[in-house]
Image 1 (spheres, helix red, strand yellow):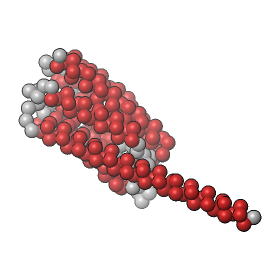
Image 2 (tube, helix red, strand yellow):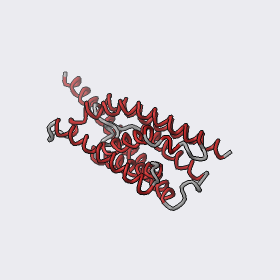
Image 3 (cartoon, helix red, strand yellow):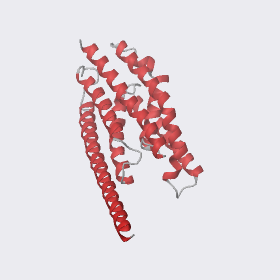
Image 4 (cartoon, helix red, strand yellow):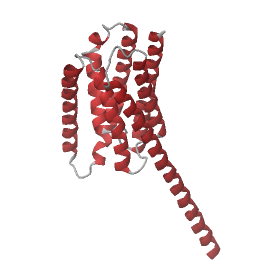
Length: 238
């Protein structure tokens, strides 16, 4: 019963984040920007790479091998979609930093990737017995906060959408819920803290993005009304 619930929640997590990634690629191509904060994307790619290629055997050696196997399969799918996310970064990322030469931006992102990879490696061995589960929850907290920061910096919905926000929230919440069905696997206060932090930050992001989208719609209607008024005045003068 518990394994079935965890499997279902793992599937929801995989589907939610896959939808979020696909929408991020689509939105990035439309708005000509990246849609995942750079540091968050670097951490995600490095985590998924380590999880699939170096931690999968250890991860699937647990008591729920079917669930763990499904999680590794989901990680492979995410890595494939990451290629599209990386394209948006290398294609449009330098435009977000016009004060930097393109080569400096690329070099900086490579450095961030290296630091993210090394950090995940050290943390997983120091606190996670070589696994990357506890590390992933901490990364989710950071990512939720970074999305809020990106919205604040851009001061618009460019490169963001409610679809991405909701799919990300569903994916993160489902994997947090999966832990509550078997807390003996990772006991202690870390996962409860990460769960509460992720939910609060994701809800705050959805609320903030909703407010920005509403303001942009109202501004668009106001601009349309002013344009229509100018057309009326122009026609009247003729």
